[in-house]
Length: 114
Length: 114
Image (cartoon, rainbow over all chains, first blue to last red; front, top):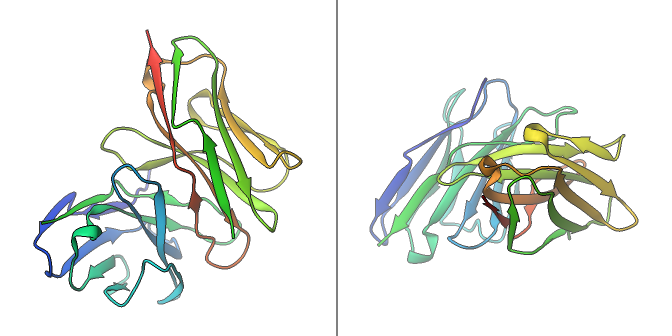
């Protein structure tokens, strides 16, 4: 069964450093998403991406964040200058589109900023 | 704006007992509703969804949920709990059209007692 994959599973970085989280959505899916879950809190929407552009972003997704689909398979989330409060589990999700409404999630990347 | 409230951050039931996890939503338009399950150190797995049509929906692992518009609820049930059901469960809502971002509840941790 096709699945969303994410790398790395765990990333440790120092405050102020740039990180890139990588995702490979399900092939032929058209809509891509990033969510995050700070420890003990709810899963929060960050950004959605369709047709090579951002379709919606949350207040969390400020200028420090960017997304890219550099080729036909990868979908990346970049945090330019990490802060301690960026420590969280980051989930990538994809959706086929059309009359398919469910999103399929990857296993997540745990980002720890020290 | 959409929102989801899950009543009870922790629910504990005996093996073989009924599982009932409560979810209430707020949406200005007809919602799409989802239940996801998260096992320890894993991503979010779709249990079931309601978009249109039959209000009682069945999902994987014997779970089902009923959409009740008058009560703005989408409670998750399973007639007989199994030890393997121990996990965190998230209710989520999205709207038709647009990015269809998911708005999640706080989650309910389900514990199964032998």
